[in-house]
Image (spheres, rainbow, N blue to C red):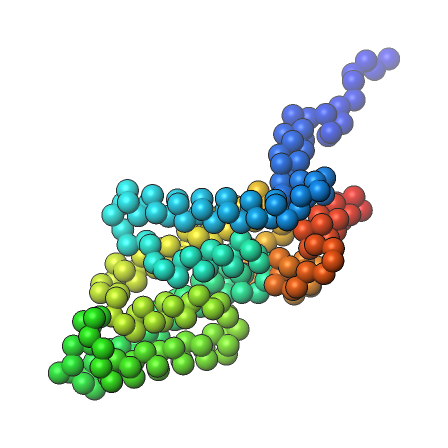
Length: 238
């Protein structure tokens, strides 16, 4: 007679640990709470404050140029509409890098055409700099659309580069590093804390169309968070 007790996966410590933390995810809390809007606002506040707070601390500790104005609106999009195409890691990373490259290229070309004008002196404003700014913004916006990596805050990266604020390669690398850090934080908060299928690289329209407000689609009378929670747990139960 076999006296060995049968152990089911649900009885394992790992399963119970995962189940415990899954109940702390935003999608689960929304399903069991009457305060969906409050939870949404709290998530945006905590995620945005923590993400930029960590980058600020790293910038202070390492003395590296990791803080740039465009990180603020990028963080807002990443945590308010994480399932939108504009918040996908591909769009965020490529758009910022493309915009910085266009801004620096426009500044360099104009400096070659007008060597007597100090275009690298950011406080100076003249018609040559206006040409750099206008061409940078126009090309950056155009190429983001052409390459399908639209992320509006990246336009600020082109403007900052065109105005001559990126004075050394360290500043350029600082923008790239800060964007990568922000995306890693978005993966953590949106996937682990939020329990959302936030993409690891490319936007998936088939997934996003079920996520209403989080995908940038206006919410109807039933808030998106409730719909997302219902769909998430319905798919888990199937």
